[in-house]
Length: 166
Image 1 (cartoon, rainbow, N blue to C red):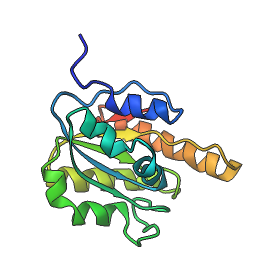
Image 2 (image 1 turned 90 degrees about the vertical axis):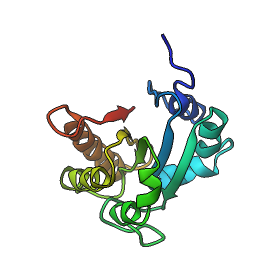
Image 3 (image 1 turned 180 degrees about the vertical axis):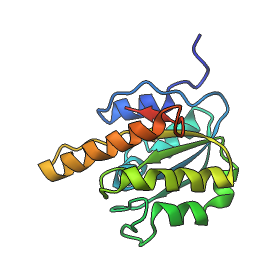
Image 4 (image 1 turned 180 degrees about the horizontal axis):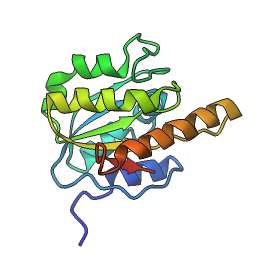
């Protein structure tokens, strides 16, 4: 049986030519953290935030930056780790954290645990990590592949047991 409000991220990503099979659950408060992919989702029509809100989800916060990685600041010089620290109160209000990071670093195998630990220190939440993709050059595609491998490794039940949006 499908849950009310099911597949909000899936439906949104499909409008952006992506495919996934994700649910966030009923009545969830959602916090979104990301890089340029999330920035583009914020500026799309409809925006990712509007898509959640139209499905009766509360978006506690959206923090994105072009060029951001877990340890590296993007255009606003704020890394994902720094964003989590700055947005502690917004994360405390969320039941789901959606992470859209993956093309701006080659250290995801080392850095993903740091980010997940930082989030779980604030509050244990359901984490949904959007797999990364690249359709530009081979260097970015190779980096995206490495990031996705690290995401998958850390998503295992033996590790952090979060969900991947593909």
